[in-house]
Image (cartoon, rainbow, N blue to C red):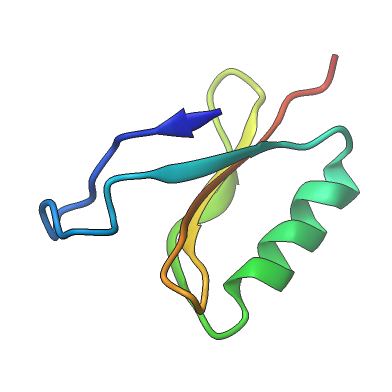
Length: 73
C-alpha cells in the first residue's frame, strides 16, 4: 500500500510517497520499527490506537517514509 500523505514540512520533491507495511504479528511490527528507525526519525511513536491497531510512522536513514500497521485478526 502507498500513501501520498505529506507531513508538516510540506511537499518536497521525494517525500510525496510513503510505504505501508502491514505486519502479521506484534513481534514483526516492533522489529520493523526498531530496524527502520535506526539512523532515521520516528515521526509518530508506535502506539495502540483507539480501535486496537498498533501503528507508527517514521523516516528511515535513506529518507523513505514508512507507515507500520498491525491489527490482530
